[in-house]
Every structure is written in structure tokens, then in C-alpha cells.
Image 1 (cartoon, rainbow, N blue to C red):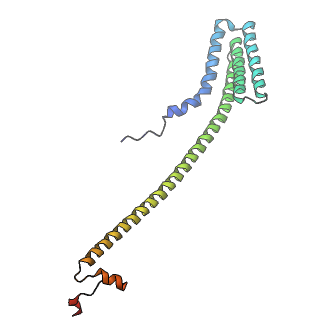
Image 2 (tube, rainbow, N blue to C red; image 1 turned 90 degrees about the vertical axis):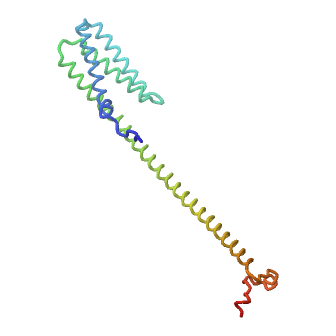
Image 3 (cartoon, one colour; image 1 turned 60 degrees about the vertical axis):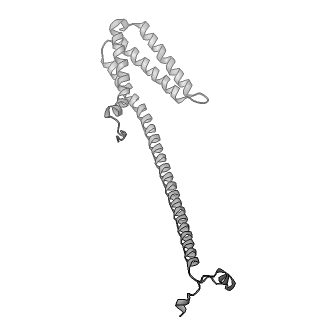
Length: 201
């Protein structure tokens, strides 16, 4: 019988680790393509990206400082602000040094935030696995106790049946003895078997 696979492929474990670098690299590549297609030194394009970045930053700040607080939505807002800023600078400037510098900073920040998420997820996974193991141990203990109790009940019933069988066999054998008089036994109040005449002689 085939056992289920418990270990994931190394690519499945590595894929989430590469997502932040792939995201920032994709933004940088698209921004440089935009740069080559007319965004270089374009004040209008830079203004649009700057406006989007400032708006996303204000939205993230408002969501983070709200009454109830929305950490996930705030993180999305700040991430969008950084993305717009990186894309705007990478699309506007001539050379690659400044876009590469911003890309490296954005990648490091993305990994810092992702590491916090991965650590929280790992803690939750470990806690769930521990709780599951404890629950299984408890269930195994309960099952063991119930099995012992059932075996004891079966042994008791079997012993009672054997006793009843032996008693019935003894009563049958006693009734078959020669000279057996149940009336005399009842009058005497003694359960002993009567003495055979041949033995008395």
C-alpha cells in the first residue's frame, strides 16, 4: 500500500522565498521598459507615479491609524506606495544606478516584512502541530483505557460463563449419583453429596 508523501519538493519550499525578489525585479524591468518607450525625463509620467505613491501612502497611513486598524490593508497601501515610487524613479531617470539602489532597498524591505510573516506562520504551524499531537496522545490514551476496560469485561463474562458451566456440570453429575436424595439434603440443609453404600462398607 502506498504511503502518503509527507515531504514537499524543494521547489515548493523555495518558491515563496523568491516572491519578494521577483516582485521588485518585475517592477524594475517594467519601469525600464517604460523608460525606453517615452517615460525618460517625462514630467507628466513622473507626476502621475508620484501622485499615486503619495495617495497610496496616505491611504496606508489612514488605514493604520484608524479606529479599528486594518494592518493588512495598511501594508497593501504602503507596498503600493513603494511600488509606485520605485516605478516612477526607474522610469524617469537616465542611468541604472539610482533605480538599482531603490530596487535593492525595496527588496530588502520586502524580505524583512515577509520574514515577519513567515515567522508568524511558522509559529502558528508549530503550535497547531503540537496541539494535534497532544490531541492524538489523549485520544490514544482514552482508546487504550477503553480497550483494557472492554477486555476486563469480556474476561469477567467469560469467567462467569465458565463458572456457570462448571456448576451445571456438577449439579448434573450429583443428580446422576446412585442413592442421591434431594429431599434428604434439603431437610438436612447440607449441600454435601450423600455417601455411597459401597464406600461406607
